[in-house]
Image (cartoon, rainbow, N blue to C red; front, side, top):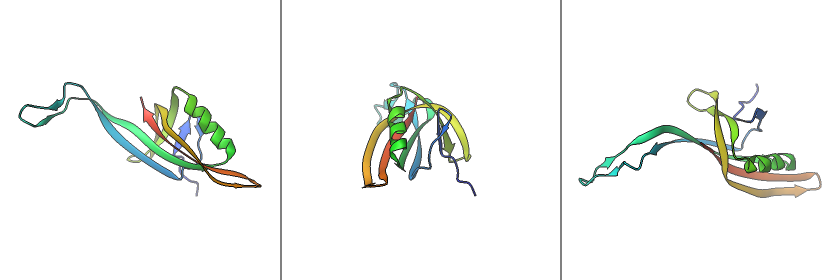
Length: 120
């Protein structure tokens, strides 16, 4: 059985992540906040803004590709929507990019790359 495709960057299939976490948040206008009575008033201007936290264990080849994607201002990302189990496309950027060497042998290196994809 073939594995699910979790991420696609600019029409390029991305390797299976070691971890994959999708969170949705709302964007609130400045007009919301706490009232004089102490209750919270929300003025939601956008719902369901996607953030995806991922970690990969990759070779030098994919480390270089992720480094190039990190430098891009915008990436068309297809991500696996956990509610529908379908790929959804949106514009995102990479934030919180981290790289860690896992092992280095005579056959090559294994790198752990983690970052957060944030929707515009």
